[in-house]
Every structure is written in C-alpha cells, then in structure tokens.
Length: 198
Image 1 (cartoon, helix red, strand yellow):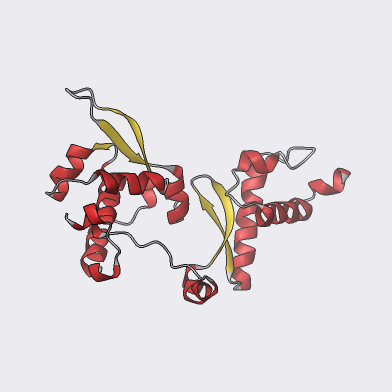
Image 2: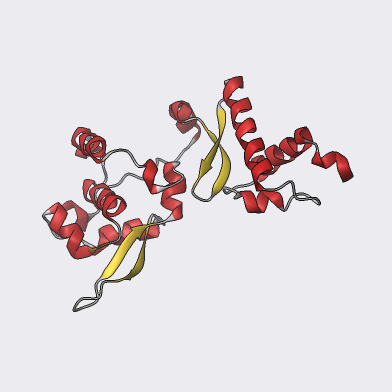
C-alpha cells in the first residue's frame, strides 16, 4: 500500500477493518504492527478516539470501546434484548452466592477465601470459586504469608473485558452494587446445589 497507508484516513480505515475482523480486543501496540511505517502510539490512540466518535455520531447499533485488553467493536447494551432472540441457548445464570463472592473479590482484591467468608458471614463453597475461575473472571494471584498460606484471589483482565471496563477504577460505587444486589430476585438465578445451601 506504500505511503498512502500513512494518511490519517487510510490508517483509520485499516484500524476499523482490523478491529471488525478481530474476535478479541486489540491493544494499541498490536494495532501499530499493521503498518509498514509505525504511525506511533499517540496517532493510533487519537485515530481510535476519532473512530469511536464517528460510530457514536452515526447512531449505529455497534460501538467502539476500550477495555482492559485493548479496543474492540461490540453491540450496544440497549440492543441486547433483541439480540437475545437470535440465541437458542440461555445465558448462564449465577447464584446470589456467586455474584456476592465476585463483588467481594472485585472490590477487596486480593482477598482470601477466609476474607470473603468474613464479609459474607457464611462459608464459601469451593463450587462458587470454581465457577468464577472456570468463567475466567478470577484467578489465584499469590498466597498470604500466614499459617496455611491461603490463596489470594483477584479478578482477571477477562473479567474487565466481559464487564466492558478498562480498569477497576471504572467499577460502579459499592453502594450502587449493594442496591443492585438487593433488587435481584434470587428466584431468577440457577443455584448449583452446594451454592444453594449458602
């Protein structure tokens, strides 16, 4: 493509196509590798911001967002009820115990299982932690230097990506989460047997 690939309009088109073709978020560093002559991180970020503004101004059903792992196109959240009609399978539902445990880990990380139990006031089933680990939302990030060396749990980049967040600083305020948890009708959640006892 030569020198014409370095015009801002061409770079923006290439970035748009690459992000559309990608199944996962792409960081700026990877996007810069698309070009023979590196446009530089500032230029790429500026063009991505312009591209995001272009899509927002057009009022499309798709938006460009920045997550913890990079940039991606995604459908707008307000259109999800219509998109759900295309799916034959139901989205996974999680028990209140799973959601409370995830919230505690997200806001108090790194935290031990004992720390989670102290906050929740009940024992945490190993199934709850396995559910969150298998989803890729939490991971063991170390061990506390106390007798028994309990595992320390923290959220992952995938958790941030799935929640549409760039960093933990974008988590809603804790009172808002508590209010949302109070509004949750637990009858809508599938609780696996061990979690249901909590």
